[in-house]
Image 1 (tube, rainbow, N blue to C red):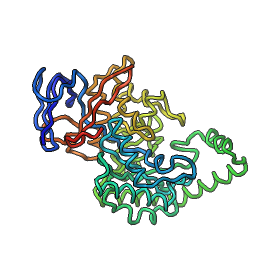
Image 2: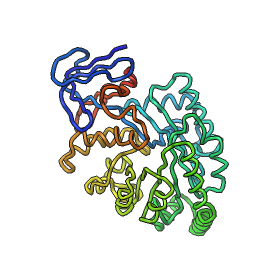
Image 3: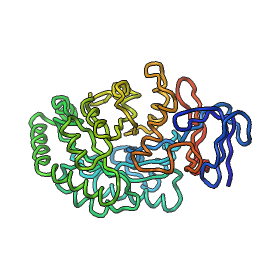
Image 4: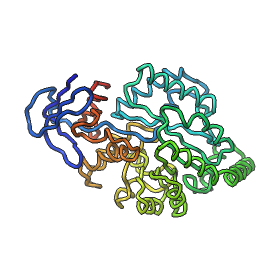
Length: 377
């Protein structure tokens, strides 16, 4: 099967040029410079690699579209897949939280397994057009983390593990007063909030250190990348690096990001952080890290659409990045972090996951999506 494009603004590696591209049997066969050629006329639209998302929680939203309303998990997976493809995400690391102490209904053990089974069934039955993988987000303070991870770590879709610790007063929730106020704003009494805080700290002291080592061993034994989530200071980063983490996911301070760079870790920030103008938790803005040359990649976190917007937002006057440099943060950089050597760049011999993008009204509009050379959106 062949597919051809011409008159495209091709983003290939660290350069862009007007040219044509040929796909054969799902793989990029040739890339040529210049106008003309054969195939579909892209009329000067951008042709870039498909977006790779290392962390998205959005599958949960389709499984529980409203509180206490669960949806068929296979149907939810199909809907989630379509939503990701519609905004250019062709490789999706569905992040599943194990052991969260304030878990939503979707993160309960029974529902988590239904979500995973539904996603896997949809994949095996050919219902999904994107390439879906599992990112196990491991809450290291959980008493039952080992039991939860048992059997799930060897799932055929498992591809990434991350270390998390959401104990209030540090990391993502280092502003303790703000966090306690949020609990109380949601109906918890001051006394109950203090009791819950004490419980969370006890759980952390009991489990975090040994569970971090356990998760690192699990990832290492399976040859999977390990990410450290929400590091706050040098000590956090040093410990993560010693455990084998190669991805610094959502560092909450510039200090932690700087130390991550010194360790050679890939620094990943949330797309919504850049697009919204800052972190909803009051942590370091992604824009600040971009300006300090401490940003390597983006993950969508909870808004898949944010990634394609990030790629073009960084080309604005404030940052002045070239499109190839900016696009790399959602294509080749996450591919490298995830150890995917078959995608993320437009070059002969690589997987033909491709996007056609046009800027309209100041925003990137995804006009076409292909996965392995097949039209997906």
